[in-house]
Image (cartoon, rainbow, N blue to C red; front, side, top):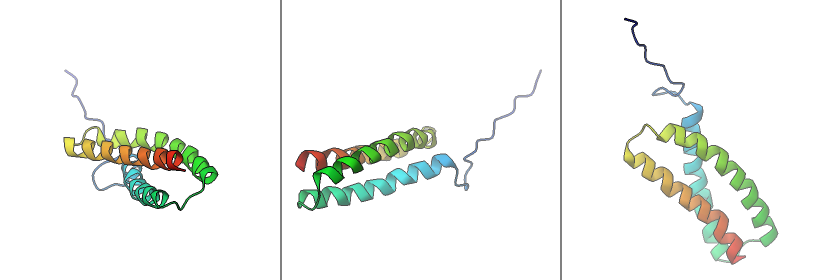
Length: 101
């Protein structure tokens, strides 16, 4: 019988792999978009600039969220909840300023 070996993952504990970095980029973006959401609610934004930032951010979010899910998928449920909450806040940070502005 052949001995089965476990594949080593590129994001082992203690290492800053692409998946872990992607997840923490989403957390950082959540903070930035929450601030942008507040500033937008106070009327401190331009519609054209917000639209361009929204498009650029959407592209970044799509790419990063796919990679971040690879990091979060094997984690406990609390990590998945944090991931979903962060994505929802980031999406709100993109959409709400466009609607308000």
